Length: 566
Image (tube, rainbow, N blue to C red; front, side, top):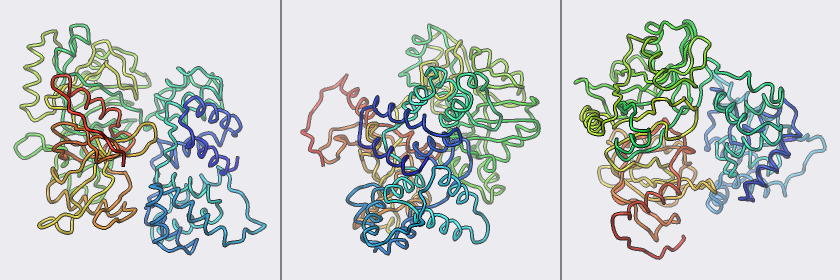
């Protein structure tokens, strides 16, 4: 299959909002792929160069891509900048530049069309380039790839390389398309996708083996699984009512969730985003090797940073550990961490996900007796649960988790089997899309941040507020360096960046606003932590922000503005 056919398919997806039509054309496309092309094609359609479990990264910045595009086309930077300013899309901007260049160049008779597998091979070579001269090798490979591409292919190659597809084709729709393409019931596809953690791999198995191949699927050690997720509950009483009058309450720690895989003497640790963070947590790796006697296991837990007084440190300090791959030994001394386990989903060749939660907890306790578990009570008393919540908060934790006693473990699903309870208004996870340089003491730092939520329908990140509050000077300085690496345009004093960095934002309320296209603005927004454990796709949506806005007025009057879309 030619890569241009995939590009034209993505173009059709971009042009429609009809979900059934999306499913139909993607299913038809999948039917015509060879078995070897299914996984690469689906990964690329979802904006990924490789399957989710693959740890390889391209490590190619937009600045590098821009340099290659300008070199290939002989275009001035101002033209590329103007193209992006007019479209707001890096891939579309690249396509425009190549279309203008195509009018001036002659296509050789020997130029062959790119295939999907050829594109994958080049991307693999880019990711695997290492050592001295690797940057130059990466650039040569990408330059050769783009140099052979049609403008529409350039558009989607750039989108894949920067991870910004935005066709509206979400994983749920892809699961339906795979079900239709290979005539496999959707429920079987969903279960398989949960187990593999990747619909692209599930589709590849479906293409090779059909329905017979899916029941054989199980957990694979060192292949991370999507974590089970929780919904919000307003208070312990609501959780008890939802769970039938009795439930398990656990401390909700202000840390980072991890998934631990152990096989024999080998251990790998994955973040909530399924990124391998083993090198950043050698102390946790050693604890698992010494204290977990099981031959094979997949465990879930929380890592928290601990201060000199033994109390939890803010989440930001912990994230310094997760980002560090050099000078780790020094960081281990500076920011010690503690591990608390709360679940086990695989043990010595046996999947435990269908066992009741209390049974999994019992097995976990027996398997890791020398490692702390999250503090827990099982109760039917709202008063006892409320006291436990106060205790958790007074000990420096976020709140409580409530877990239905008979609940199975459902990978990747956010349901009411697990509920999270916090005292404060639920913060929002938003994406920084632009920043401004500060004044006075903050001169020279990007310290005023534009915060955006994701529009589920279009994939666009819409600004809902702006803040300069919450980060320390050290964090602002570090954030400035990170933002400079993802700059796509400068508009006077405003720096436009790729929507890559997620931050947790607290606020007093959400107001209607004529200022922003979203029609809403946060009041007294302040960044409470940087969520390096979350991807932009996991940021809160405009739909959720609108829901919170509407909920505010259940107990007070509402004042309406006329919203002018900008």
